[in-house]
Length: 62
Image 1 (tube, rainbow, N blue to C red):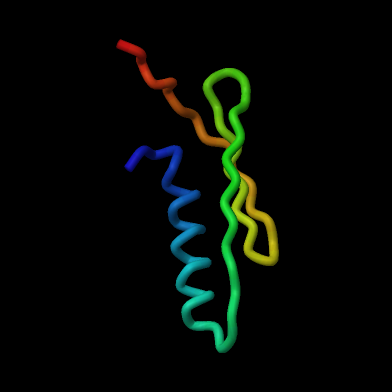
Image 2 (cartoon, rainbow, N blue to C red):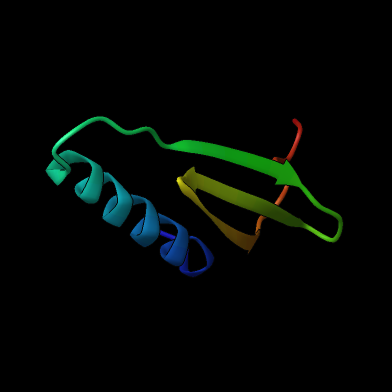
């Protein structure tokens, strides 16, 4: 796991645990947008929106 992705994964797993424990129904939506300078914006929508900006390396074409 890359260090920049850790907060995103942690929040996503916490929200999943909350939804499973919830007495009802729920949903999680994840949007990923490409930003400039080797970054992506990750938006987790689960009633509230959690926004993260993570660094990434573009895939190398062979």
